Amino acid sequence: MLAYQWGIFAIALGTFGLGTTEFMPMGLLPVIADGVNASIPAAGLLISAYAIGVMIGAPLITLYLTRYSHKTSLLALMVIFVVGNVLSALSVNYETFLISRVITSLSHGAFFGIGAVVAMNLAPYHKKGSAVASIFLGLTIANIVGVPITTWLGQTFDWRISFAVTAVLGVVAIIGISRSLPTMPLPKKPNVKNELKAIMQPAALRAFATTVMCAGSMFTLYTYIAPIMQTLAQASDNAIAIMLALTGIGFTLGNYISGKVTDKSPDLALFVFLGLQVLVLVMFRFTSTSVVGAGVTILLWGMVIFGSGPPLQMQVMKIANQAPGLASSINIGAFNLGNALGAALGGLVISIGFGFDWIPTAAALLSFIGLVMVWLNRRATIKNIEVKAKAA
Image (cartoon, rainbow, N blue to C red; front, side, top):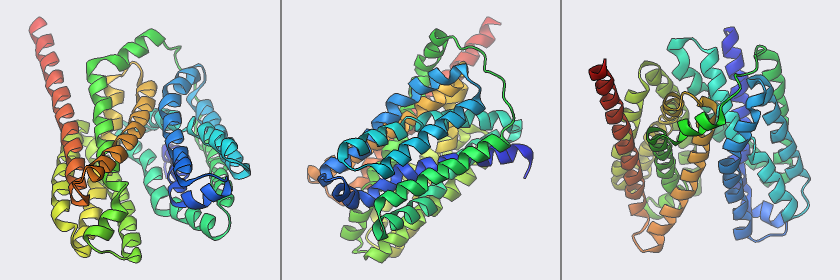
């Protein structure tokens, strides 16, 4: 690998750990609840607490770290990650475990945000989209490898071992980042007022809203994928496990393809992947009654839903170019907000009596709204160019 690729790989190791620790508790919820003497609903709040910690912590931690070099910031965030997971492994009651999860979440958004900026700065101009995609690759592989392995460890031995192993992943990332990233100068002292102005402009807010809609679409379906398959396709537990693996493979393929398309045009990548999301989700309503048809559609869905990640991240950094790190971190927070929105929307569809077959349609609606947001931003950009041309 080239020198800059080793640096990007080291950052991806960090996102692999972050993805593992974020999604692992979902598969271990019953044993964690039993281990900390809590009910299942109370344990479920631990997942919500992590998402809230990401949303609140991402902008605040990112702004604080502007006084340090990006390399130092990434190392500090990984130290927080390791401490949080060690505390999770040592937790003896609900309260200490909740605190440990909030501590861990504080590293999440800022690491993705600053990591994306570093990756773009390291990569040559024609590889910037692929560099950002590589950061997200750690997250997709976590769903294929990290989450299943740590879930198995927790179910077979002890859930605390899963968090201890995740802490070790953080230590490996620290070593990789310290050895592969070059020494970085202190960033220019930010003007907080200008940075806040950059992220509050209408185009940036629409970009964040696009991320919320896309993530909301993802988790509207993903949260309820198992009961959908059980109810509509009469899928067995083994078939559902295979479909979840297909989802992870789709995430990885989509992320890789997206990096190539984003290298050419982030705007094109957004239009393509959001448009395909709508089509695939509409199609899923009709293929979900067959195990084979659903499996093929889930693979395609995984590709198009995660393919939107790199161009969404590049879009916010491009629009809020005076505050790329802050914008990137807030975008990760927007993704977690979409996570909560999607799970709530799917639950609403079921609770009002529409049934599982309507969940893909609800998800498609959010993807369509995201597509409209992209179109509005594109139209605003063209209008600004025309105004500047006339003024010149």
